[in-house]
Length: 214
Image (cartoon, rainbow, N blue to C red; front, side, top):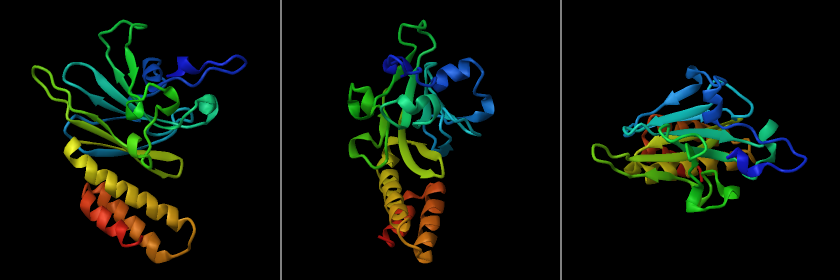
């Protein structure tokens, strides 16, 4: 994404996770691998800041893969026009400069100012890949989640579970927003319980808990 935002008098935006992995600036233990068909979550540190976990990799049977990263207006990324979960599709069989890396822009837009995925935005809160080949079907849904301190969550799951996961995630976010304006300990307990159910992959239970506090 970086090459699209070079401005006169400004430093270039930060490098993508793809480039940082190639340069060995991101180590193997900073990448979480999730296979298609699995359900797993991660909370990613801002890519430009660094941290224990910086991206999620979803390998596909045809040799391509997705990289999921958290881009925030920090450091070199401060000049980016958008922030949130960014999804890259990498085809290592393609020569560099010919489309090795494709940004999967949210909502089907062609505008890089709306490139990232955000839980609170209806047309930008899920990426789904149901593509299939001769011997495989991708069956992937990638969903942005809430923040935990400076880390932004993302869920990798299957399309059939995406609706329930989004519903639960948005209910948790709404409850967290309400909680920031009150000192109600009961509401804070509901948030913790709803998050625990979500992380246990029981999205219906998570929503039911969060809905009690709204």
